[in-house]
Amino acid sequence: MSRIARRWYFNARPKATIEGDTLVLREEPLPALREGDILVRTLYLSLDATNRVWISDWDIYMEPVHVGEPMRGFVVGEVVQSRNPAFAPGTLVAGLHTWSDYFVTDAQGFQSFARVAGLPLADTFGILTVAGPTAHYGLLSVGQPKPGDTVVVTAAAGAVGSLVGQLAKLKGCRAVGIAGSREKCRWLTDELGFDAAVNYRAEPVLECLRRCCPNGIDVHFENVGGEALDAGLTLMNNFGRVVVCGLISTYNSTGTAAPGPYMFRNVIMRRLTVRGFVILDHLDEYPRMTAELAQWMLEGKLRYRLHIVDGLENAAEALNLLYTGGNEGKLMVRIGAER
Ligand SMILES: NC(=O)c1ccc[n+]([C@@H]2O[C@H](COP(=O)([O-])OP(=O)(O)OC[C@H]3O[C@@H](n4cnc5c(N)ncnc54)[C@H](OP(=O)(O)O)[C@@H]3O)[C@@H](O)[C@H]2O)c1
Image 1 (cartoon, rainbow, N blue to C red):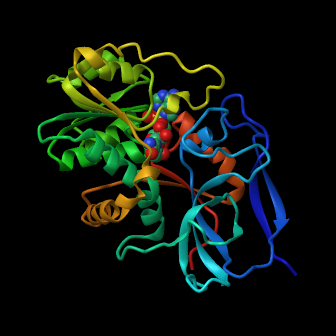
Image 2 (cartoon, rainbow, N blue to C red):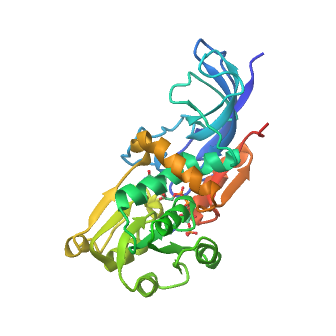
Image 3 (cartoon, helix red, strand yellow):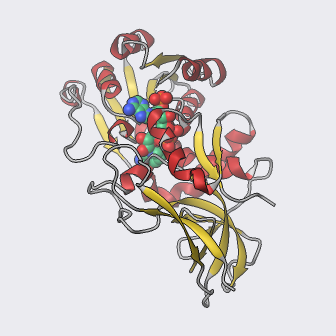
């Protein structure tokens, strides 16, 4: 008898945030394994802000998820059956696949997932799959911070942002974060070593950022877009770098593009370099970046929070936490128990 799997499908394009009928959970029989296939039991699913972009009607950086298709995400799981000599049963594998508790794949695009001695699987997967390399590449390769620089990061208490500020400190910079609650700002300054944090929901962003950056901004790491980006552009120093990593405040908008930034003229006035990037273009740099990140994690130089939601059935609702600020740290779903 074939095994029944549960899998989320993209059912209807949302008008804004994920709605009740945007994604639907179905049960379906798994196919028999063909030569080269593996059957994987999913342990963790990473929920990433870009998941909402994949189901938008935008022209994006990769093939979107089309209505009617299974929802896609980064997963780590355990091979339970194999007809592929490269993956014995029991091997941990990671890759981009469907939001499912079990799935069969020809293993294209899958790799063995290396545990890091001294780090739990959830930490290694949660931090080293997307958030860590994004912070590393975005800040260090794109932002090019120098000791003494002031680095500002938005969504600073999130998975990427919290790492960006700590990497800035490791490189001898002044780190200033912008985040959406007093508790998040307190975590940044009191526990992660940020020099200052602005609560954008409670304080006038430009005024506070000006006060927190008395020598201007050298690197602005953007995760959000909107008011904070304009505040950053306003305060940039000559020849500063603006790293455009994400624009999460726009991801739930459909149709016409969100307006702004209004301070775009400072790209000329301050002779700025503005550069966007997609981390998937830099997979060749993963070995170097993840080795460094893992070492800093083990040494306690990079701290982080994991926000783990239990149960595949809660994945769709959990995704919205990213757009409301309800997540505290790297958002992921525990789908199967580790053995
Ligand atoms: N370029 C790449 O390759 C790449 C790769 C990974 C991630 N990213 C980008 O990095 C950013 C962070 O992603 P993440 O996965 O680390 O998520 P995250 O920062 O852990 O969570 C998202 C956070 O964004 C903030 N936010 C959401 N809507 C907002 C709004 N309208 N205004 C202000 N802040 C808002 C919320 O924090 P508050 O409570 O502070 O509001 C929320 O907690 C996203 O923009 C994502 O697209 C880019």
